[in-house]
Image (tube, rainbow, N blue to C red; front, side, top):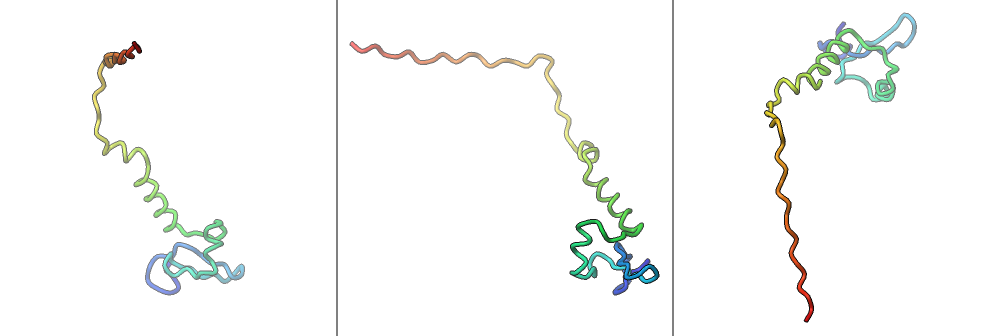
Length: 92
């Protein structure tokens, strides 16, 4: 399904009546429909679901862990040596 204003794939569908609807891409979605979009009241298309899934895969922690550098752990962590406190001078 293509956008009513351009050749891009439609992401949202504005249902005027039960028989009449207008598809819009994200760029051409009218401003009066923005509140409905944020509230989840606009019908979405399969293209929207596919792009949402792609974005979720890119942002998932699993993809971040693949790129993470592994750090070797010491079997026994070393404890820092205790620091001696300075002695107070006695008043004479």
